[in-house]
View (tube, one colour):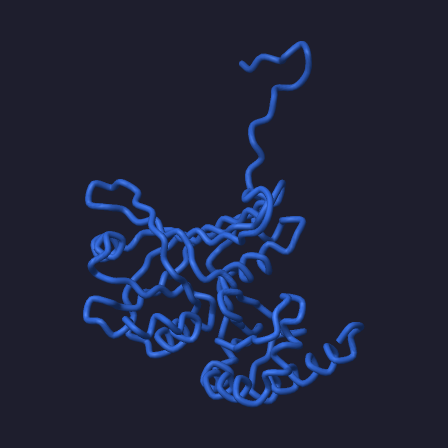
Length: 257
């Protein structure tokens, strides 16, 4: 039989993160933005004794948002993954002030080596300098298949996410995925002015497009990144062109353009 405190109700424990669908903020949008825009993160693997081992890795994403990594078999984290693929990846946005005031996302799942050509293309577009060693025999590309996510968006903003909330469903948008590389090359070669308009709020001018997907575009300027989403998802190249033209027109008409 439980006892009742004379001076009031029992104290409550720490609040648990809400499922993303119940969170009072756009948890899915913020989590996907962190996935796409963060170029490096802390990878936690398990060694032979089951001891957690954390290390720093560079990160890109596949078209659906799956985290991609280029890893060397000479590294402890790679040997750990080859023996036990369970891992988690912490992606954090940095900035001035208290580091814990900025959003961060932990993605838990299993990582495995991939020979998918798109993984190589998207990773090297995001990290061009990695082309210097990507073909070394001890290196390989790994994809982390998410099983769950934990988002901390800052003070009092936490949520848990499912695999389907972390990743973008590509069904019906295969044409965008197939036409991505050609569209990226065309935009970088002929429409640098439009890219600067899309990413104007990020505060740089010399942006390059690294990837396109049905939900948005990924850009880099030196070490800086920007994730720009379309007004609504697109499913074919015609819809993509219309979205990009409309976004550029609105940006040109905005105050201060």
